[in-house]
Length: 436
Ligand SMILES: [Zn+2]
Image (cartoon, rainbow, N blue to C red; front, top):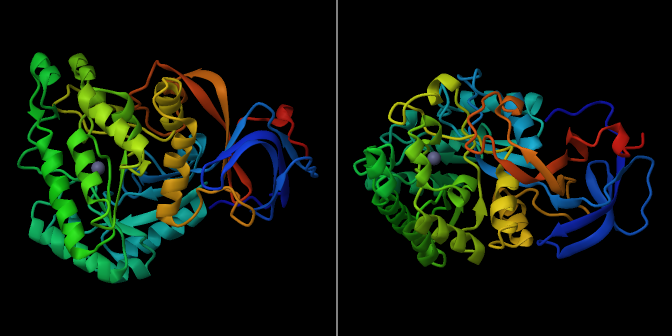
């Protein structure tokens, strides 16, 4: 993480509405940060450097366990610098980077190189995941013990499902013995032969669809194997009502957690009628029934948290017909606002549950952050819940611009993001009341 030499050792955030379900805080108070840690919470705090946060909300920093920063290999789409700046602009203080890069993160030397680059180039706490299988090919397992020694935080073949249940089972057993969690993208490629969800919208648009069973069958297999092997398994981007229900069934039977994405919670497959490759994503946007089922599962705690699957793509990979476009959306910069606008203001999710699913629960999963308590690292997000802003593709901080929310006006904007006491994103400006 970049640490400026001029970082002051103390900062007092005054008068914010502090909301943190993990510590039970929910009210206006002051927070003192000293030497990168939260040192005092209470009223009437003063400091040599202050942020006047009257009217703003202060949350534990958001944590995103699913991000593609395209480094190494596609730095034209995203770098550690731009990816982490986009994350910070979205209020994220921690991120897990996915290993489907070029070269693929399947050897210790690639892991250790990335870990060193993250230390130099990332504004936020970034963790490196390594591949579960060599070349993501679903055949030969990676040397997980050595990958862990090199600094890998978890293993994943994200972007692809695992073709063979036997191979996946061996992978879980090895990951368990190596002490690494497994993040699984559940997709059966013998069923997922289309480019959008196989439903009414696909039929009307004349596009080849992949049935929901492509995700559901792979999710069921993964959960059964997780229960049997005892591996620590995280199912990412759950997008169907049935997969969410399956996760619920296995919650007490396996060491399993799960997430869904902002786009699967806020968008549906009627967007495929545009035939615009921008809206291609994996798993695909689903019909309303699935979106509803996933939302209820997140609200009820069956699904543990939100992860963005931030997937930058060059415009020449997205400005194409649906069949030819690369799947994936930008996620970091719009995640909170999209969910706040549609779910919280829509009366479907409480603000406290949104903070729990963006901060506390993923923070617990990575073992750092996601809580606002004295003695914890000062990883914080300051938000203006009243600010409306238009998603302008020309103004994205990411190096790419493939946001499915383009042109929409969202409510709720990140004002500042603080990592270890340092302002890594700051829209307050000097006029806002930062006193040096
Ligand atoms: Zn994926």
